[in-house]
Image (tube, rainbow, N blue to C red; front, top):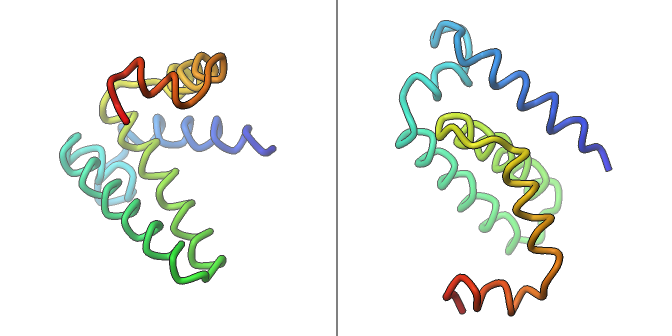
Length: 107
């Protein structure tokens, strides 16, 4: 798995946080705050979901990349480290998905 790509992308997002918004899409998103970043992430997630039902794998692959990028931007805007999210995923691997959801009160 090419997980180093995620680390590189996170580093790029962090570096662009201080760039001029007119010079970088990432800087522009981050300068507009969490609400804008959340909205963009949601839009991309919907586009990926819609692409999945068409059966167009190339379109879904492109949309999934957009979702991952915009999630990382949202995490940066929110002050949440990707490492913390990965720790959460690792902790969840210790129990079944059904048990994990029940512990969070979700069905």
